[in-house]
Length: 90
Image 1 (tube, one colour):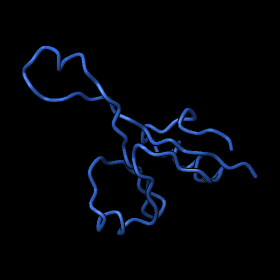
Image 2 (image 1 turned 45 degrees about the vertical axis):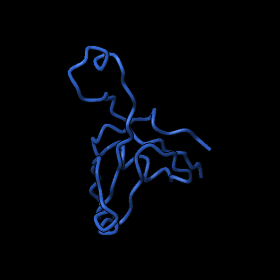
Image 3 (image 1 turned 30 degrees about the horizontal axis):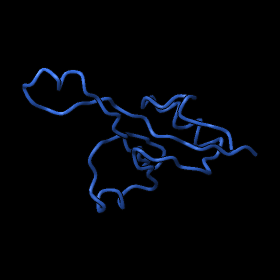
Image 4 (image 1 turned 90 degrees about the vertical axis):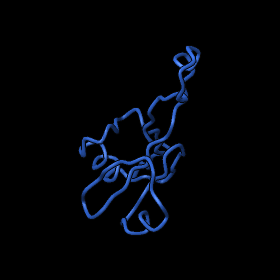
C-alpha cells in the first residue's frame, strides 16, 4: 500500500501597515487541517486544548509523512483546498 507525505495548504500574506513596500512583501503561511469524525476542516490559529479535542490534526507549515490512501482521498473529497499537489508518494 502506498503512503504519502502531506504538505499542508498555505495562504500568502504580508505584513500590515501603510507603507507601499508592504504590498510587495509576501510569505506563505501554513493552514492547519483537522479531522473530527469524518469531517475535515481547516484553520489558522488553534490552542493546544482545541487541537486535543479533534480526532486528528496536521499542523500548518509542516510535512506529514505516512498518510494513507484513504486519508488522502478523504481530505481531497472534503473540499478544504487540499489537492493532489499536497501529496507526494513515499
